[in-house]
Image (cartoon, rainbow, N blue to C red):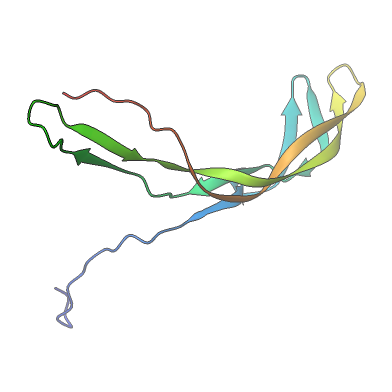
Length: 117
C-alpha cells in the first residue's frame, strides 16, 4: 500500500500484434557479400497473442484425459515486395528484391507437442 492507501498492483496490458521495425530503425540490408546502398525498413511481427491448454476429462473412467490446445502466433497478414540497389565486395552492383511486412495479426498455429512429467 502506498501513502495514499492504494494497493500497488501491476496489471499486464495486452500489446496486440503489429508490424515493427527490426532493431527499431532502418538499416542496411546484407545478403551474402552484398550490402544495400541505402538503409531500408526491415520489419517483423511482434506482440502477444492468446494461447491456452485445457484438460478434457473423458466420460468413461477407463479412458485417459486429453488436452485441448488453442495456439495463436503473431504472423504477417500483408507484405509488400520492394527492390533495393546493392553493392558487393567484388564491386558489382545488383538489384535485390525483399519483402516488407506491412500488417500482422494473431493467427491460429499448430501447438508444439509436449510430454507429461
